[in-house]
Length: 334
Image (cartoon, rainbow, N blue to C red):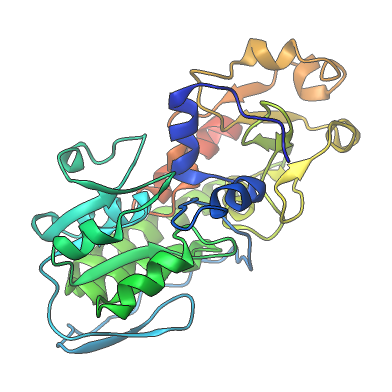
């Protein structure tokens, strides 16, 4: 087992919004209804293709989700439940907030208009009975391996006839496609096309701004409370760093990197994706063994404001890319 995380309630809650440690997923999965958000890696592409027109949906509609499951939605959903923070943001951005009846816990509390919704999923589990009692006719869940939403909860919901669409973004393209999928499932195709079109334009603009620039060797810190965690190679988040003009230091699917590996990689820049309330630039400089890293010696340790912009595959993902570009290449956006 991993050493325990810092015993602060807010930090534990923060990790529920984008937990990156597969071991934590395993520990939580020991319970029958555990929910552990995770960001699994996958194929990545640095080129974002142009938007394509999508016809308005007619119901019933069948959606093939990211797990390959064909999900039939018999009528336009009126009682939607979101089991990922990204899905909550997306549903509100698509203008269907009045049909969202419950959500997953979100320590980032975004959008604020969703604050009053009942919370039916936390780090401890998913309340299937409450979802059923709300007469949910569409649930947006998180997938991957380990799954953001526990498979047991998904199966229970499907057994009682509730359509569950499982999304799992492994690249920028898949994150944008997930927004379109939610639009199709919720009957908001045109709104989804508008959101995705705007995001694609932003991604294109930002990628063009960093094209041809020097790419500093960059370490993106997800957590270093006990062990050190960073982005896996081939993940959405490695792709985000590449688009921002970085040469990212990556690891494998465990998200873990040893101090020896990090020192050997010798990053020129360290970006702190940790919550700034808990990890500061001074904290990094004071860590044993970190003093010889070039980024620390040169003072190139930078905090990323609103870390969820970078780690949440929702409608603000392009804002996350902009935050990375501002940190790495502020001159590119002058």
